[in-house]
Length: 306
Image (cartoon, rainbow, N blue to C red):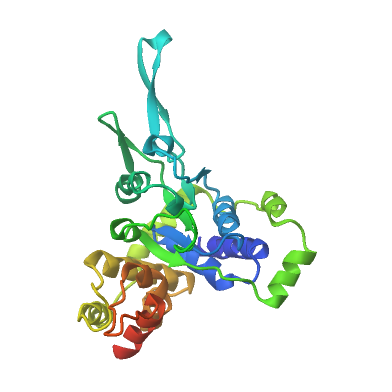
C-alpha cells in the first residue's frame, strides 16, 4: 500500500513541479491522519496541491472559499423547513466530505474559523442539537495568505494546534518555473490524475502505523525536545503534549514511507519544523526583536543532543 502512496506522490509532483519535499510532507500529514495548513502568498500552487492530493488518493473533495461574510452554517450545513415533510430537514454543508479545502481560511472571521474546530478534532458536526459523523477518512487542507496582507484575521492558537503540519511552498526555482511556462495548464492536468488507491486502503495504511516501532531512546529524545521548548529561553510557551504526540505520529508515517518499521531520530528532525514551528511563539528579546519560529525550531534541534 505504501507503493501506492509513492505513486500518488509522483503524480502530484508532475503537476506541482519542483516541490517534491512539500508533496512528500503533505502526503505524510494525511497518512498520519492530520490536517494540513499551507501558508504562502497567492499563486504558488496551494489550491492545486490540495486538489491533486485528493484526486490521487481517490478521495471525495470539496472546496470552500473563506471570506469575511462566510458563516459557520455555510460550512457545516443548515436545517431548512420543508412544507412537504412538515418539518425541518438538515442539508449537509461542504464539510461532509473526505478532503475539505478551506481556501484562504484566514480571510474569514474568528467565529467561522472556530466553527471548524469540532470537525477537525472530533470528526463530527453538531447542528440543531444533533451530532453527525463525518466521512472517513476526513482531512482539512487549509490555505492562508500572509498575515500582513489586507483582509486577513490571524488564526487563534487553539486552531493552529489542530493542524498537524504547516507548510510553505515558496516560489519555484528557475527550472520549475520554466516547466510551468512551457507546459500544459496545471488545472487542466488535474483531469489526467488517476486514483491509485481507495479510501479503505488509505484507512488501512493509517492503522498500520501502530506497528511502526518507537524505542525508549527515541521517546527520550522527543521528551527532551519538548522539555527544552518549555524552558522559556526561546519560546513564550513550549510544545504541548498534543504537539509531541503529533510529532511522533508524523515520524511514524515518515518512517513508513521510507520503508522502515521503526522510527529513527532523523525522522523526527525532518518533521520538527513543519510540525512544531506554527505551534510555537517566539520569545521577544530585550530589543523587542523576535526571530522567525522556523529558525528558532532549528536552534532548538541543535541544542538537544540525540
